[in-house]
Length: 160
View 1 (tube, rainbow, N blue to C red):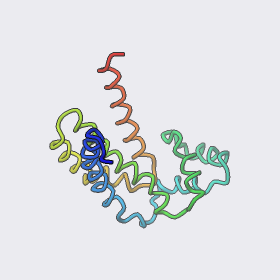
View 2 (spheres, rainbow, N blue to C red):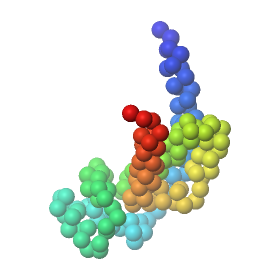
View 3 (cartoon, one colour):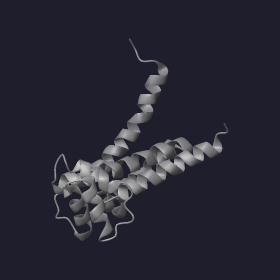
């Protein structure tokens, strides 16, 4: 049975988004085996904590007030593996997802072609790329902020 027209058009619309995700993902996967820097050592300590209570003890000194729920997430993630690459992988995936969502949102709001080129630039821009390779919360902040902005604009523009 052939897919319906709407399913076919959905697949066509998803193809550039998947391509942008891969374009953003590949450079983020490079050099993940580098040694943790001082900032990332806090993430490694959270991942190595024996319990969630141990994570909260680590949050009190030094003060890590910007992390939200990330320390508990990375503690659970660290139960699977404790390599530098593994602890950086959530940031890599959310960084690439941010670029893909950036494309999807702007293609919907403006036009697919300029959204594609803007997303390609964002995929390869130094600072977002660098922060997506750190085992820290920054990529999560970027994605959640962008999702919140999109949600707010949709609710504001669509009367219910």
